[in-house]
Image (cartoon, rainbow, N blue to C red):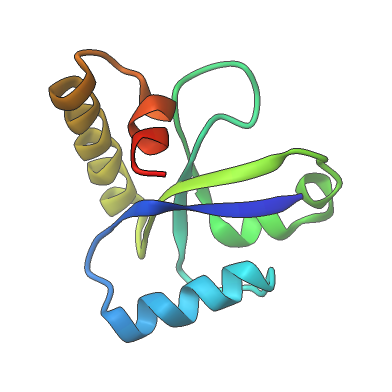
Length: 108
C-alpha cells in the first residue's frame, strides 16, 4: 500500500509547518494523532471516504496492493466533512459533475 497525496490537496486549519511535517509522516507511514484524511473510495462504492489516518496504518490496509489517493487532510472529522462538500462544489463548478478523480487529475 502506498499513499499518494494530491498536488492540490485540500486542508483546513493547519499551519504550513505542521502540514509539511504531516506530509513527511504520511510518506514514511508514521502515526499522526488527530489526522483525518479524505480519500478516493477504497472499494467500488461512493465517490470519497473519510478515515482517521491511523486506521489506514493497520495491517488490513497495509496488505492492500493498490495506492490510496489522499484528497484532503484535516484535524477533525467535522472539518473533513466540510472539505468533502468543498471538493464536490469545486468538481461541479469546474467540471459540471461529480468527477472527483477528474478534478484531481486536472491539476497533475
